[in-house]
Image 1 (cartoon, rainbow over the protein chains, first blue to last red):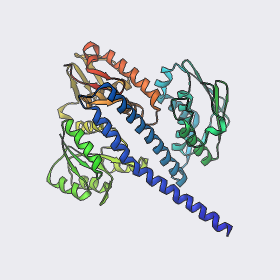
Image 2 (tube, chains in turn green, brown):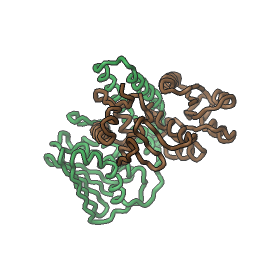
Image 3 (cartoon, rainbow over the protein chains, first blue to last red):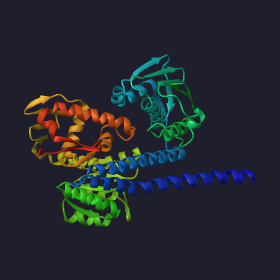
Image 4 (tube, each protein chain N blue to C red):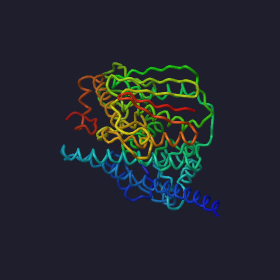
Amino acid sequence: MEKFNRSKKRDDYGAQQQYVENLSHELLTPLTVIRTEAELLLQSENIVENDLKHIDKIIETVNRLAKINRGLILMSKIHKGIYIDCEQVDICKLTERILVNFENQIELKNILVEIEKKDVVILETNKTLIEILITNALKNAISHNVINGKIEIVFSKNKIIITNTGMVGVKKPQELFNRFVSDRDSMHSIGLGLSIMKRISDYFNYSLEYSNVEKTHVVTISF
Amino acid sequence: MKLLLVEDDTDLIRSMLFYFHGAGYTTEKAGSINDALEKLMLYSYDCVVLDLTLPDGNGIDVLKQIKRGNIDSGVIIISANSNLDHKIEALELGADDYITKPFHLSELNARIRSIIRRKKQFGKSVIEFNEITVNTDSNETAVNGKNIKLTKKEYDLLIFFLFNRNKVVTKSSISEHLWGDFMDQLDSHDAVYSHVKNLKKKLGDKGADYIKSLYGIGYIMKEIN
């Protein structure tokens, strides 16, 4: 009986995930309509500055919704096991490649990036997911950094440690990984990004730890 | 330039018709596979904008028919699915490009222009705007016949402006065009600002005046009145 309940629970969860994914896909067209209508409104010639601010807000909010929606779809896909294919990935090389994407943002904040390779880290893993995981980690280290700040990336045996300067931490570290908890004092909603990192780490049984001492923040991913 | 928009959502098709009409295209719409195939048999189009989820089946069938019938028209797929496999399948079947919802109209427009240019070439691969010329084969940009050196991002940005000339493009659409959709908004908006500033500087005094900022929401590239 108990066994039956357990498997039923799992089925319910699976069905629920599928439902969430279907709904997320349904949202994409209305989101496109809001975005395109806002873009159309912008083309109007007799629009005044004050109106533009409202349109800007609409566009910004659609972007936020789109991002949340993308996160939901990704989470359902992870659950469904779509990212099951594994291959050998050189984590140091991948990290360096992702950093190139962020070079403008790093330059603008004049952030010093230091990379230390104690060991070569090569994993048998899914390339798409590991890329999302590292991208999110670096994105956080950059967007929550300060002008003239610093990011230190250390690769050691089966581990990557990302340390960044930033503001004094406001949330309890363990709370940060819960879905949709966000640091409201910051302009960004970081909750989803972190919960995606957590989900991917759990999927591969990697350990993901965050700690902070005053203005220094450390994320450790152990593979 | 003639476009066929295949999409079953009436609101979305309305926005697209409105926008592309204003951008100087002749546009027609089809709300289903049958509708699209019928139009494709009767008329010719420079580009077909094709949604995949249609009431009477998968839009991929329209693509297959276009290829089977040797119809000389570009095809850009719009889809709700960001799955890489779907993208690859569509491109392998002969689609020219693939864009996922929710897209920006300015991005869709830039991609359609690029497809039509590639198809027709108009005899040359140069985009001109007064004294500015961009050669899309050699990736060279010149102002008054004199080459200027643009970074990759500045070059992409200039092409995006040129394809969307006379239209307001938002900071978000520029940011997505340059970095993809994974970038956080605020950081990339600062980066957009600095790239636009540098591009304007390189385009010279007159060139700089073509690109106007619109109260922090976006930019427009147009003739000086």
